[in-house]
Amino acid sequence: MSDPFVVVGGDAAGLSAASKFARENPDGDVVVFEKGRWVSYAYCGTPYYVKGEVEHLTDLLSLSPEDAADRGIDLRREHEVVGVDTDAETVTVEHEGDRFDQPYGDLLVATGAHAVTDPIPGSDREMAFTMHGMDSAAAVRAALSPAGEQWVDTDVEYVDAELVQQYTDRDPPERVAVVGGGYVGVEMAEAFRAHGLETHVFQRSAHLLPPFGDAVCERVADHLREQGVSLHLNTAVSELAGSDGVEAVVHDDGRVPVDLALVGIGIAPNTRLLSDTPVELGESGAVAVDDYGRTSVDGVYAAGDCAEARHAVTGESTWVPLGLTANRAGRAIGQTVAGDLEPVGDVAGTAVVKAFELECGRVGLVHEDAASDAGFDPVSVTIDAGSRSGYYPGGDETTVTLTADRDSGRVLGGSIVGRDRAAIRIDTLATALESDLTVAELERLDLAYAPPFSPVWDPVLVAAKVLRGELD
Image (cartoon, helix red, strand yellow):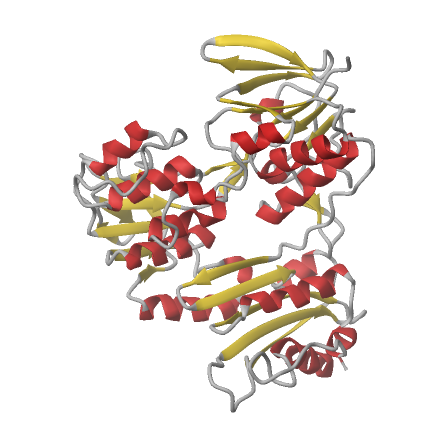
């Protein structure tokens, strides 16, 4: 028998690849090694579990170990791959103190990413958390529960019951700090306020959600303040101080007393496993891959948060660690390894985030300086338009920023913010980018109209109409 298709990592990219391979090649063998207990979970749902909108942590599971077995996948949890030998075509695996070598026919590295806490001293204190993984989510929710009350299902085999109990026995916090104003920071601020906690958000730069552009950032900041969140912008955190856990956030202008801190300053790709191999990394530090997820070494693939992808606008390699990117690339690689070449697809950085009542979306090159760096001559407009016909109730002002190249008229990117179905409208711009549409072609799209859903001129079309005038 030939050696199996070996997958390192049992989350979005890894199990998508394994599932597709097993379906397309039922006679083939696929082995998935996952160093933890949790597999195939919805990381993006963890803030809503902490908030309480998702009742059970297991509700976030997409594929159980039993489901994986039913699909013909040899899933081995609590098996950590600690080495790769691309010459011998083996991986070294540790499990319960034992070590063994597993040969592979093809190898997929889907090791994901890890939360960054450096360079903030005190990030390892008790009551200092990140939100990268299911155990993190369980610990934070346990920390918010009244002492002695159990808000986390510890009878589920995946849950680290000892970790949960450690925080369940403590008094819950009254004041919390969120360090970092990106996706996780904004979503966790909403979660903490839902529990009635005094919430402070610290952001090194002048804006929350920087990739979304100034128009979105300004509306989100105003809205968070309306919701009772204290914003500390242009404020670099120098330490999480305390003797027994976290007691204060220290910054250049002083200190803010808190009982809990959530650090969400970014993530970095998990590539250390490949450090002693000839597999090449890209400029971002993630694994460099081609259009089919293949690395610089034959038979070795990479996908998900540890791998780069090609940008739909610039054509250059980039690192965009998002859920769809991981699932789509993993599925494509599974099909390719099964014998039918399938490209992993380009990425445009399409992203949405909920900030209390506001919906935010972004895609492509939103900032003019980024577009200029990519060799374009950018022109941008920002407009406000109603989300529904003016006479129909329930509408809200929707703000759209649209950026295009002056010479070609090509749409380069955009952002959207509003309360009424604003985020989903970003998909129109994502489609325009993937299709290389010009502003004029975007303006001529036959988008749906009915008073409950949209005005005659959808806000995206209004932005295209105004920007076309600027280009002309």
